[in-house]
Amino acid sequence: MNILLALLIIFSNPSDKIKIKEPWMRISAKGQTTGLYFKIENYSDKPDTLYKVEFEPAGKVEIHETYDAGNDMMGMREVKFIVVPAKSTFELKPGAHHVMLMKLKTDITRDYQGEVSLYFKQAGKIDIKAEAKEMTKKKTMEHKH
Amino acid sequence: MKKHTKIFWITALVFFITICSGCDKRFPLEQDIFRTQNTFLNQDSIQVDFPEIIKDKITLFTMIYTHCPDICPMTTHNMNLVEQRLPDNLKDKVRFVVISFDPDRDTPSVFKKYAEIRDLSFNTWSFLSGDEKNTNEVMLKFNITAIPADSTYDDDGTLSYNVIHTDRISLIDQNGKLRANYKGSTADLNMLIEDIKYLAD
Image 1 (spheres, rainbow over the protein chains, first blue to last red):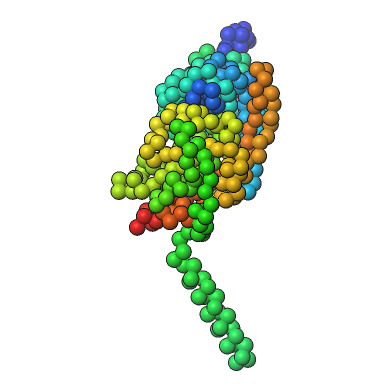
Image 2: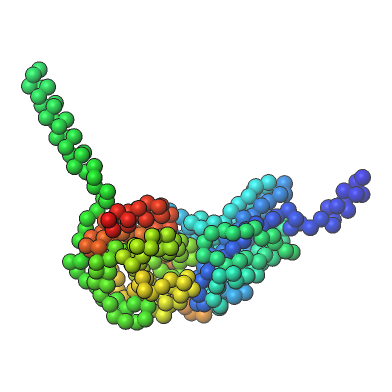
């Protein structure tokens, strides 16, 4: 029994503990900036941390949060990482946390499929495809490893 | 005692009249914005005067910057949804004006691309950028604030910054009066459309 458990731990993929749901990015033009959004579902008993995002067609990528600056004003600031507590879901969504894709090297038109790499401290690298749209979420897209 | 009762009823009457005088007042504002004009370049680099270009039209107006990945596209999208949901008889009566508070980066060609990628028609939409003086005067007129923040120089030497800014869509009537302001990124679109219909009637 113990041997079986040990084998399960050895061969289990750590990224199975993290699922990325409903990834999408907002349409935008070459040279401009856009936002990437998705849900992080952490099925693990441990918290995990998103600390880096790569998107080749962007000259610069940062994790940001939008915040209410008072007096009908909105601001945005960089956050170095996002901690997703154990057995919980964290949503990056418009008006809140998002991945900022800057200095775009290509147009992000409707139905463009962007290949993005997410880096977690526990789960490691997770590759996803994010569809481009203006705003509304249409369908869930599973991640690939 | 009788005197006190009389004062009470007079006060109540004045209060009642004051309240009721505002009962049919749908809009909180009635600010004439046509007293001064400002000069901008539109998305085709043609010089135009604002608000002259929206004369006799009901207008949704906002100020944004195209490097904003989140709030400003949401505001633009909300205005786009309003246009799509307008009844056919109102479509030609309504205009959409977007002015940049970051004109150094939002040149006419940048603004044009921003609009084209969203399939926005320049028959009804105008994207304006201007010099600092004209931009600031419009911001003052509409009580809009924009503060650059988080400035950094990237590896390629370009200056990168965000802007903390007012999140707003303004409704201007066909007589050139600012009538209402709405939170731009989270506006109640049904309310906006009903307010436009009310102005058009």
